Image 1 (cartoon, rainbow, N blue to C red):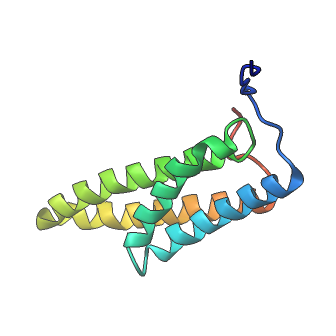
Image 2 (cartoon, helix red, strand yellow):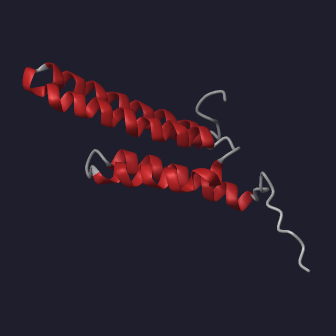
Length: 122
């Protein structure tokens, strides 16, 4: 008779796993930044966020993943609104403000991950 398989609620993270998660977080910020040249990379970044989300759960990098995911969805929302309203000029200002906001979020996140700091208190 075999022993029951017990799954720990929180698996221990090795320094190597932590380094890989941090590197992945930086790559996702890079993909977000690259979206200003190749827009598809923003979608790739958020897909990676969702796929790898469990790997960072319970760590300081979890806040970065949440930050990155929210950046994507709000950028999409304001981008669609700005595109729709660009026929009446105000949309152009929304699109510009959205671009500045995304640049800020990428820069702030990249700086914090480089300093090993979460995005905000959890």
